[in-house]
Length: 299
Image (cartoon, helix red, strand yellow):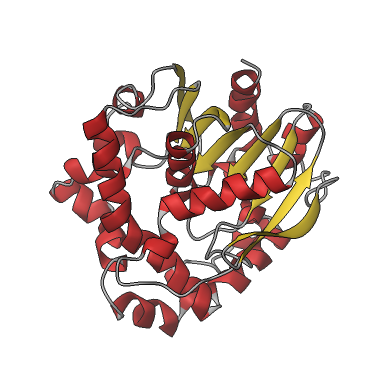
């Protein structure tokens, strides 16, 4: 149950940080104790964590929530033909630079949706920095694509549409609120008024919409290639890994128990399981998510 008595990001302050190469990230930070960074998915911003971050801070964690590169109010650099400026490797580098700038050489990473791909890349590229990896509603990109049958293509058609040049920008830009179902009855209350307002500002910004599409374009190209190289080299996540998913989303329906797939990517899988929620679990089931994360982060 959502605690309506808790204010928006109580005790957690907002800032901006330069992370190199002209990139700045908007972020929030609060609490004391071992650090954990929370990485949002598409099409959200860091404010999706507003019901989770204060609970983790109260539980003795330093919590950092950034807008990923391209999302929200973080920098949106020009892209290139291979979309590498929006690769998960580039975004993971931003996360490490942000955390180091805040004084954290080692930290836990929790990712949801697209943020889980950034979390995975952070753990693979910077193994000395990541103490724990938790992924929510995610399997590696290459594992999705290896299983891309008609069922997957029908359910996750947006992956392939978003990768097309120009067409998705034009289609979404006609009415972004309708595309994302942003103004449906009860949506603002369900998300939280401030979080909903931040989400609306993001999807209404054509630069943000383009950057979010670049995330998907990189996913089918340079990100897939990076994961294929990891798999060929036998490279795996070495830190404790937790796999969670929303029981009312379709990840398990499409691929079975995600832990069976993640077992090939982690040397220290610590379990996990479904959470009774729709896709945006940090908004819909924050207490249950925190209940799963707290013992894992204490390992």
